[in-house]
Image 1 (cartoon, rainbow, N blue to C red):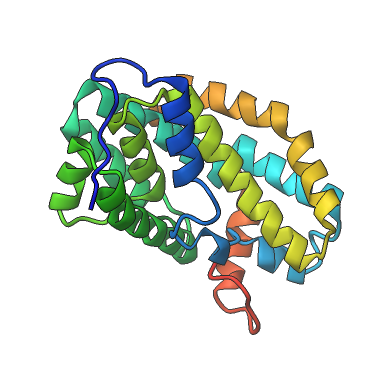
Image 2 (image 1 turned 90 degrees about the vertical axis):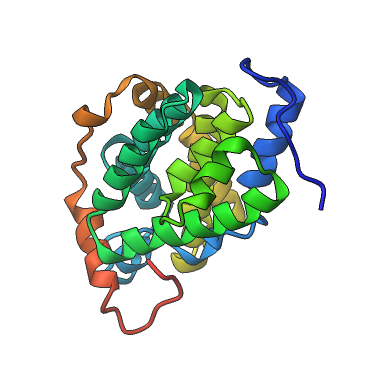
Length: 238
């Protein structure tokens, strides 16, 4: 098997190479099973709390400002920072925090299962020294930590990687809403377009937020995630 290596050492990767990797790692076709998770959105729709495109947009906006999308963004940014600095002890502490910070059983399953799948695939197809280190530990790696480490290990700039990460996360949830509400494909794309500026705001805040300042305030989403655990009929795992 051909093993990918960073094009540069110690500096940001060329735009073409960075874009190629980000498009690959965060594509819906990358085998991490992202399509199987809804972060409690399925439960919120089933209970009638989210009924249309505007409600989906508001749900995602809250997630970007106060919820799991926000906390994952901060964890991603701090993981990338530690990885670039070569501070492996800090990276492992961030991963421990990320695993403990999950408010529900299903959200913990979501981040660890996708993190495991990402590590297995990427360490074979796009390996680098940092991924080899994490794989050798035989530990559970949270999904944002895994992707941020891969980006840093290939010298992909944090802002570009975090933009791609957030876009992929929002797109996955919109795809779930298209199937569950249901929405039309055009409505789904309008939601993604409407959230562009908010996504960039979340990226900028995350880059500047220390881990010890991270908090969330989306109790409705967390309760929806808890309710999903006992929902009778489910299409998604969270």
